[in-house]
Length: 326
Image (cartoon, rainbow, N blue to C red; front, side):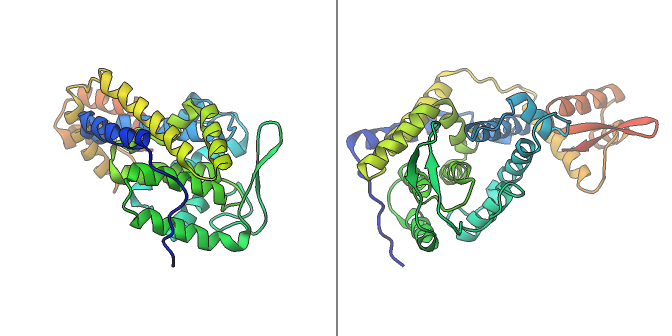
């Protein structure tokens, strides 16, 4: 199998941005604390899903997405609700995905598009095109018979190339959309895989997802893709993606992010509670008192706090209240 380099060039602007992004990522000293904070992880996961689906014209707002993932009923089109649940499922197991595995790519698509398309977890069998908001065809995808080989070659190049991951992930994203391997879901899969690749380089990008960056710069995103299509290489797309990543990291590094002093204690408490829920259907106030050695009032505050953050759901158990994991 060939390891042919996709067409792009690395110019001075790209190299400067790669160096600056790497330095900025290192300066975001709160990364480890954020990564260990389950509340922040959940908040950012919800924002990621909302952003990626909003780009695909999903009608749900951030509050509705949050409600769905907290087990609440929302009046909305079943398709939009299914998109949210499917996306959450695949993002929830993102850490277990191998970004260079074709099998994992197909498996992820099967989950992402379950019940939403006829061909899920497999490459498309027919032709496909990309249309703009006016219905004009702006790109025709690769012929079906070439898709498996081209995807494998792209995965192999991404794994083995000596280029920096910041560059390789952008190239993969663009080339993936160019191939357009699936009947539906190519956009959300391309963004998912871009985030997955970056998160393997630096876990920060699981917290600062590509999806949110693109949603905030959606018009420019499509302009960059179109310019790369015209030029016949992904250089313009690489420049755009590195620019938005650098801007986001700059904002984070200049902002004041306060991690509550109680974070370590909260994480410890959640670890104990979540371990208990691995072997029990629910947890009650009396259980928390015994597990953590706290008073009834403190146990109530702990459970209420985790329910408010979306980690637990309050349920009625006969004449008492209990909590189950979400």
